[in-house]
Amino acid sequence: MPYLKRFIYIVMLIKSLCAVENNFPPLKNDNLLRAARGEPVDRVPVWVMRQAGRYLPEFQEVRKLHDFFTVCRTPELACEVAMQPLRRFDLDASIIFSDILVIPQALGMTVEMHAGVGPVFPEPLQTPSDLAKLTPEGAVGRLTYVGDAITMMRHKLEGRVPLIGFTGAPWTLMGYMIEGGGSKTMSKSKAWLTDFPVDSKRLLGMLTDAIVDYLEMQTKAGAQLLQIFESSAEHLSKEDFLKWAVPYIKEIRDKLVERLQQQSIPLVPLTLFAKGAGHSLKEQATLGYDIIGLDWTVDPVEARKQVGPNITLQGNLDPQDMYKTPEEIRALTTEMVRKFGKQRYIANLGHGITPQTPIVSMEVFVDAVHKAL
Ligand code: 1CP
Image (cartoon, rainbow, N blue to C red; front, side, top):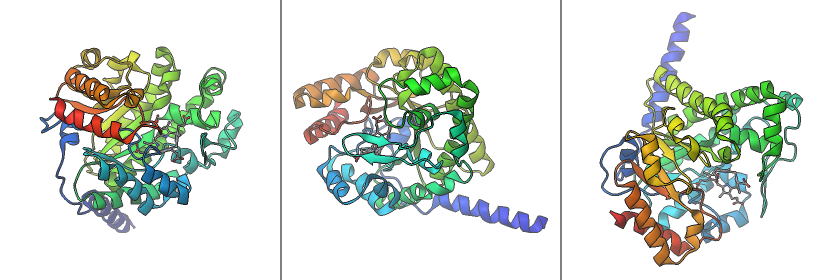
């Protein structure tokens, strides 16, 4: 029996190492990864949150034929839409097409995408007794389609640019699961934090464990950088952010490091994007993340002072600036890049690109980043 166990262990180890290698084509443009590691870059790398999305007519065409989550669950379709922005723009990274809400789905919740509304949970969590309905066992096994899409995308990219994987962070996912969709106030989720602190911790812990499994799986599938979206940090006070978001974000990184070390799998760079948490950059810089994403409310020079020299910053043009004239976009982008500087910097918007953004704005933004320095 011990021999059988050892044999299975060795087979699994070889399998996981092969998965990491996977014979992917060599990387031609590694500026993103070099920026993440603090190495010199040929040019400032740029990508855009939601770069595959509704502002692209070719994305709309795919969506006319297929439901949103069908696109996420079908690796060919997920790769096709992830490739779309790369065909148009000289981007330095690709991001796998998926959504943060696939984790609540894997935990047994129904999530629908309603046109013009966004995500809707027909049966959100109403009271702590609803936690019993969640199915954390084997959750990552219900997300293998994301790993399959990542592996396929690495091959389709032919080494052109690195591939980013991502997840929602626990507080943000908890918010969607309780509110039943996007919310302007997060009032129900905040009420959970005060009325049911023990159950809130249980839910956040359950999400943390699922996220660690999910990021491990994405790394093995071939993701070259991982971004954690704590998009709903903006609803928390500094005190609550440090209490209800930060410990889980730290735990995710610590557990992932340990898990990958045990299997001798190299850790990829990690980005923390906590929207609206510019009040806690110093604290964010202590969590072991390589890159900190900034929204547009944060001044680049001030952010650098707060995080110190050993962290890469990402961001942070206001997505609404993309509705300005090409001349204005170029001027604002150039100014932004010059404030951040060439080292340890990844250009991006300060949040996702919005659906009505003109295509020409993206062209100008990407070009202005590359020409700024
Ligand atoms: O009908 C459609 O086509 C829906 C539009 C859409 C798209 C293109 C949604 C619904 N999700 C996505 C893709 C998506 N979502 C990506 C793809 C990769 C990329 O190109 O960047 C990513 C990274 C996300 C992440 C995501 N989903 C976040 C975190 C980032 C952020 O914007 O803060 C959040 C909060 C979601 C939830 C979600 N999914 C979709 C919408 C419209 C929303 C936000 C809803 C709301 O809060 O009101």
